[in-house]
Length: 167
Ligand code: QAP
Ligand code: CO
Image (cartoon, rainbow, N blue to C red):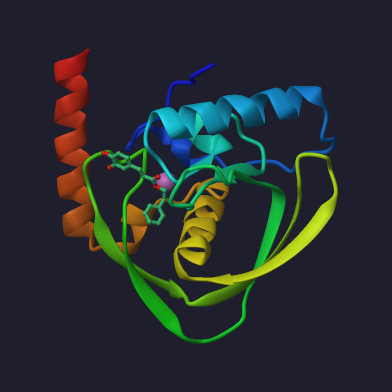
């Protein structure tokens, strides 16, 4: 099932998500729906927050063929370097806008998979960028928060105008 994606500046995107206490079939159904929604929208990452589910769950697929879905439940991240790498980021909740954001270049992430088993990865490049971007969503943070207030306000005004035109 394809789920509706909340768009900036929807205040629900500011919700801090709660930990998943049990990885059950309900969670696995949501994971499948989020992956379907992400692929349908041509995205590479989607956090539960973006589909108005305020639990600590995100899905990603940064593979070329779009056949390597990754699931992170209750993710925890530590930077492995002081080095920061820039990347032109977008967001399914901020459609049509891309801006450069700098984040730690290399991270270690510990999470549960779709079977509730703990796993850990160390990563850099696009996967590291995307993981940090999606983890921000779980804390109510958006990539536009790293931009100047002026840029953020311009994006907000343009999206609000589009939302009004759609209503
Ligand atoms: C986060 O974002 C990300 O504006 C995932 O019109 C993005 O999947 C992390 C998308 C880039 C690192 C680099 C955005 C699709 C998808 C749009 C996405 C759009 C259609 C964004
Ligand atoms: Co996003």
